[in-house]
Image (cartoon, rainbow, N blue to C red; front, top):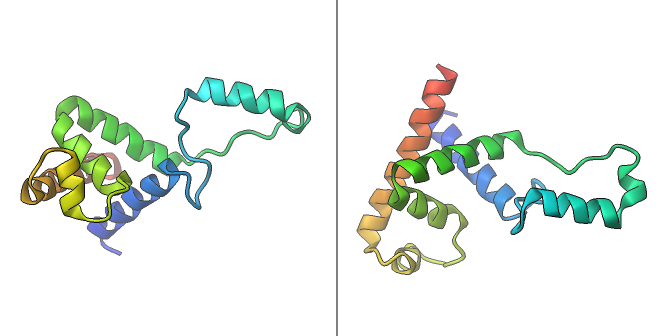
Length: 125
């Protein structure tokens, strides 16, 4: 697996986690504190045994990179999130939901991916 394929794998892992797929509960629509508080209330005896909510450090690392990207270029971040997390079935529909042409959407997604590649390259080299 080359580095580009590895980054794609990590982005897919992030998307699966974020949507609550096979890798865990994903990120809640509400704050982590509120979710944790609810879990503690509902499953009090379960958590008294020191079981904690699942964590996916790899997905959280990508999430931090996407948050940084959003600060740098909101359009690239929105396109990247829509590409991996959007429920629309086609690229054209994802682009339309952001009021972009399909070609512009693809360029923004690629720029977002390159941002993640650069951040990971800096971290691991």
